[in-house]
Length: 185
Image (cartoon, rainbow, N blue to C red; front, side):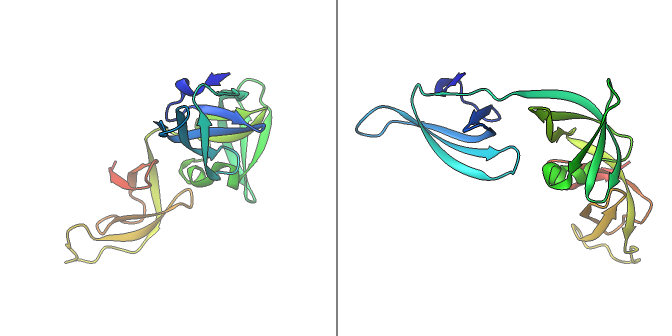
């Protein structure tokens, strides 16, 4: 069990049998009564964000979370198929469970996954990944506008904006937190 004094950004708690991650929190003391803690929580399965207020000293549950290395094998329809590296069991994960993070995983990549009661609910990606540009418009000679970008589709199917000098087949580094182009590799 966690107390409100243990709250910090990124802490994972359980409310009403569901796992939540604390996005923001603030201790405050109203003029009358005891201290309270305002929080902004993200439901880890659906991604829904909600506001909740706790009384100071209130206890919340600790979710049954496990972290495990798994290998991404392939996409089957809209599902991602992961394999447990120890037992070699395969697990189909809907694209909605991975959200935006699914666009940064290539076939054969080993990623750290987050499991809630044996069900995969997310992946922990590195801060940046190296991917190939599968499709983009060719750069035009003389296009030297500083900071100008164009859309590009990466080898995973993810769409991002890249500088005008990037061409199809180039290998680039992408920030997984913001989806921004970092540089060429």
